[in-house]
Length: 236
Image (cartoon, rainbow, N blue to C red):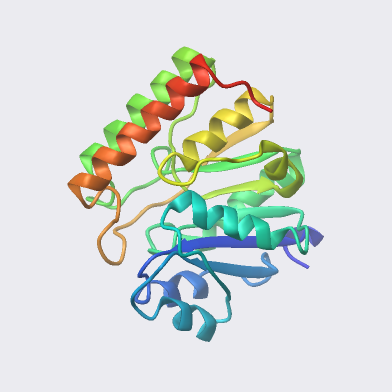
């Protein structure tokens, strides 16, 4: 059993992360986590076999998109219905050993969702591109303005009670996944906390902030999601 007798599953969406995954998986504290699930999102390298060799459960999701990969991981997790799910990127930019910092407020203080904030924590120089840094600042400002809730980051490193995650009825398939989760949690009145996490240069190039297309698409989808939920979409 994982952290303080709670069953914990880590979901790692991964696309061409063969070089980073051994480090990511090795840094996950074994005594806090019951299962590591890597969702291969159509890699053309050795990502699936590397994940298996390092003790992870491997799922395949050929439909490209961060949200698609996360939804595949959630579908699998329903088979064991854990207490808590942790989402973690597979590029070694986050510090998996900090997982307990995300789990503690849930287990000990009754929070429903805990987000790792890179802007509250320490960042290696160059680990966040200017477009990522200022995009996060602007997006969280809009959420504060339109929804009245103060976030500092849309970082992917996060933990959430599994039953609360299922109740969110997540829909986004691509770049809007993280902000959709945060908006739906606010709308549902979840008890939410941000904790500072460390951040470093990733292994390999980012598929989002590392390309012009990725940056534009992610920025567009985040803004679209914010305004869509503000103007049109009730939470079901």
